[in-house]
Amino acid sequence: MRIGRYDAAQTELEFAVKLRPQWPEVRYDLGKIHCAHDNYPPAKRELEEAIRLDPAYMEAYDLLGFVMEALGDDAAAVSLYKKSAAISESRGAGFAFPYINLAAYYNRIGDAKLAVEIARKALEMNPKSDAGNFQLAKALDRLQQWPEAVEVLNRAIEVNPSASTYHYVLGGVYRHLGKLKESQAQMDLFRKLEKETADFEQKRRDARREEVRPANDSPR
Image (cartoon, rainbow, N blue to C red; front, side, top):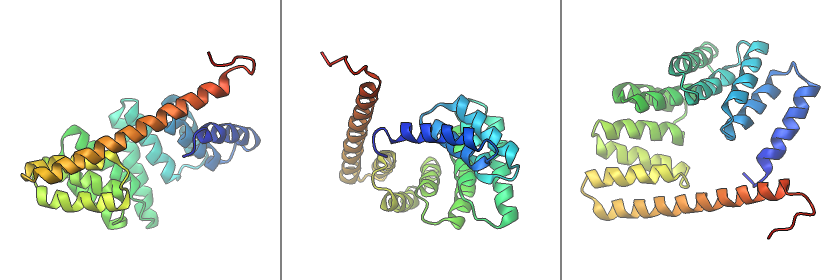
């Protein structure tokens, strides 16, 4: 996303909330913006309000689960993911995100078998999900099912080649398989993408500093 666009979107959505405080979609979108900034307490507030206004808002339950996980409340996060998934199933909506987030949670706590099961369910709904394939691959890596992990990671990279973590994990899997040349190539890609991300973030920080500097305050 272009530098400064998040800040402009947040300002617009905060104004929209004042105009239409009873619209759950506006609350949800503002919660997403706060979440993108890692501002989890205000994200939590907006998403809870979106759910209060629309108790069947499956996307809001899912994103609130992510926020609660970031805030360290795993029990609430899992409950919210499952609530989102239940609403999706009741509608036949095929909403894969709560399953992906659940798989990521089970990967984080080391339950690779359950992560595989849930990630496969997410991929039944959206086979091209790079995040779903990545969570499946992480679990397969932990279970030492490396040939399938390579296949799944390559599917994720085909969809989203700029995700540096995908290349890092694939490099590790190739190393387990003794494919050192392929492993090194993936690690080189990982470092290149990480540098590009760091450069972008520095430009973003510089741009935000310029936005708040008084007009008569020239750079030294």
